[in-house]
Image (cartoon, rainbow, N blue to C red):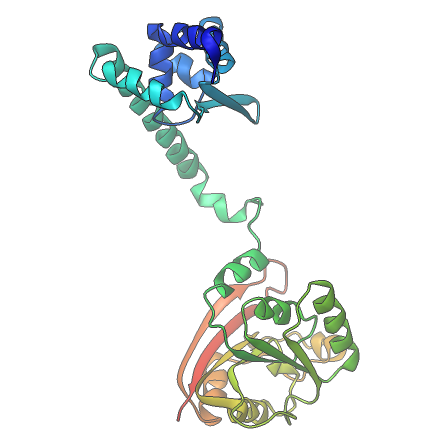
Length: 311
């Protein structure tokens, strides 16, 4: 109960035409004081006075958004009374003019946003934008991946393994380096992931049972294989019928230094070469595309290939 004094103050707040117009606008959407000044064509002090009174009787809430304060209708026992008061003047010329002003404000916002994107369209891809990372995009897309049994062959730093584990039923991580796997286990434990199994082994001779995985992933691992054809046959062997293969690797290049510095056995693959290797291993429905080009020299290009193990 708000008492007689509170009721008197509430009715006084609702007894002013301008305050009712403000409440009506806020019933449509949250607005700043600057927005209300524009729509109602009133000065700042006048708008502030009305908003402060509406806040005092708990009809309006406010919150900071950057340098501005935004206002909205407050929920509570007085909300029904407000709606009833607003309904009485819903068709008045003043209210209709206010709603037209609100729509004009919305239209201006859309025009400003469109003008900004039109202005930066040619260079937008080069801009450092908050939140735009390949990891973020990968995590978002992985939420659409099936909850299945994954084998990640040649895990490297394990970043992809851990992202897969967030959506997978289980992930088996295979790498020739026991130290790489130890580091992965440590990071997985720290992240609270308990569905990763590590297996030390050669991706050309997998110590894994036949037909035991739904998806096999080879991410920047095939160029380390002495015999990539054998690696792909092993990938097919451990897949269930209709299981899927995902390969990320480098487009053929001439950077010989990667052999000694990075232990690469192959200088990438041409599209035809990779497709023939996958099909030669017995896969079907092969799809291949150029996915991304490194921004920095020597501008390595990444190929993405998918395929299906037939029955």
